[in-house]
Length: 512
Image 1 (cartoon, rainbow, N blue to C red):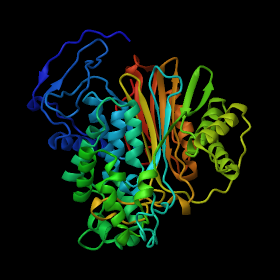
Image 2 (tube, rainbow, N blue to C red):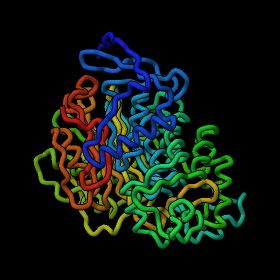
Image 3 (cartoon, one colour):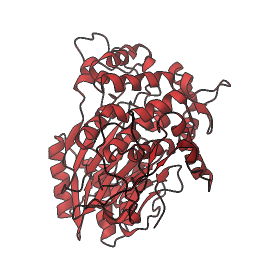
Image 4 (cartoon, rainbow, N blue to C red):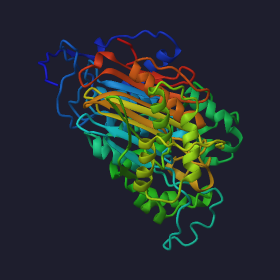
């Protein structure tokens, strides 16, 4: 797209517009935005307004999001959808500062470790698909929750007290790899929003409050969890309570200063292993060192002129989502086509490499010979989000602790709620997909919600392409972004959508 000349004017902090709420969720989101501005996530009072016929933001190289002289962009900067408003607005701030979709998605994922640790702490794992306009299919990043840690000869006896085995914390490594490939700034900068939220405190959101109520008794049995999530009256935090996380702040600051690798091979890794005495997690230095995310080709499905990219197995929620989306685009009522496809896949899945699993799943999608199944057990809780920037780069992710609040224990002075080992539980369904056509972004969708997640995401992607997203399943909670006229270029027709039955938030959600 040809760049257009831009004129500018500076606005001081005192001239910032006052926004009036139009409902509880919007008003709360505005309070969060004001909080971010007051606590440094919008550090520096200058705003830059770029005025063009399409109100496009000024184009300039992004070297630092929060350094001296950094400016805020106006106009359309992208869309963010997530299950948690604080994290969604943190990601939007990154876009407003000139970061791209990968930068914002990484910031969002790290912010969720503060705002929704029941489903997305630093101890979680997940999967993302990323795409930029010059690519045919994009790339997938798999950082799924792991099984029990392998024995480490250098840490004799470290596994002895694994009475509640934990997954290796994969979120940081997964987001780092995705942002390394697609981001525009140093990964350390994407940690700043999470640090600010953890240090200064946030209001407990509706989703976190609901999750806390479900696991109150077992969660408060852990001293570390009780210090974070307990009230003075012996109950868990409620919606609207303010809580800060001092230890998690220190961990995030260490990741920012020493790098993501410190959590796996450095001082933070040593603290995680030492915490086995109280967590019974069975983590080892060898296990932390060897657990790495995987970058691979996504699954792809083409319907008409639209091509969609999905996370591949072992994140088989993408496979189920692809089946559901293809059925929906073919005019069929998807029902539980995605869930049945996943059940069939898991019934016949063998031990293979990610490349082999992807090839097998792609062959089934291409042939249309989808084996169905039924009777999936209760599945781990999850959460999802998606981001698109003004240039059409997009990222869609789904993450899980492999159990609500994972093991229910906090790893010593790290403040990390540990995810549960995948060796003893079924895999969560983690659907994420991006639709594109002729080098332009059209739509993205993700979802959570037990066995309904893949079908909810597939239907949301279809609805986003049509410009009309609706909730279609009983348990699935989808998030979607729609740009029917394509990005880059058609930002006036972009909107975000979150399931109104949940407590998520979509930035830039006005229909034009």
